[in-house]
Image (cartoon, rainbow, N blue to C red):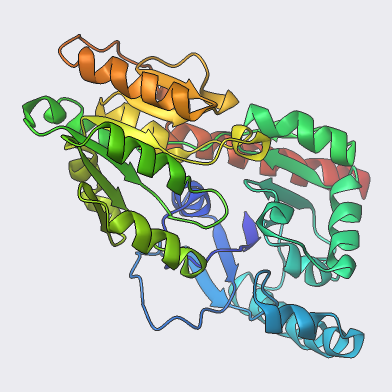
Length: 371
């Protein structure tokens, strides 16, 4: 199978849904991974399977003021997309022998390019692109038209997103949730019991739009004997908030850690925390970090996420009071034997197989329509 994936995140940044899924596809698949440019001087070294070629196709970026101003010029868009479409076709010719069987996309600003490629389209809906701030009217129109088109197959990452997507686009999605690499994280499932310190920990992006800084302040004040450890990339728009919580005596913020050491870090937590702001857009999400916590074997207190309701060792919260009550419960019952979760349905190996079958079915359906 020849696959193009138009991504909103670079392969060499965080190890996200796309890398996990594609890394578990058969080695016989040829995958062209199209990624945006990155002006950051910091480099993240991530291994790339031999059957995947990563190529940067510079495109407009949401959240970048200059980029958005330039994108509103119809002339600049015409020139930009004409050149980028030509370049993309050259990449397809070189790395996919001239043809793609299916296009996967998760970046709205590549839509004008895929319109020129005429291949079956699968939209990987992990985030609502409009939740990160306003997007230009021209791309919003293209985005809504593309996802409202019944020929576009939508794969969402959670049950919570499905009703939202169907209501917005009248296009019924299929759910392939975010997952966890069980083989890696289950190896550390009991290590946290040997840790005598009380550590409340979070691993993930510290972002302006969804990280709940006020909650961290409340937890810090309520539990002065606990260490609060936060590991992850820092959103440049949240530096003032990050500096404020960093000044708290029992809060330490660490930089992003290598993926391979995450099981060891998480196993040192007494409680795993998902401290995100509580509103409907977050409730529809499905944090992979939550699954990593549970796979390691630690109790978790998280903002409410419909996808994970019913899992053991997990307290889902919609208010700060519920967060505090959840932490209280686990601190007071730290010696209680935790119930095991069967997370096999969330194993990335299983999910990648399901995902690829959907791609195959979409290709077959498109070929039958063209007969």
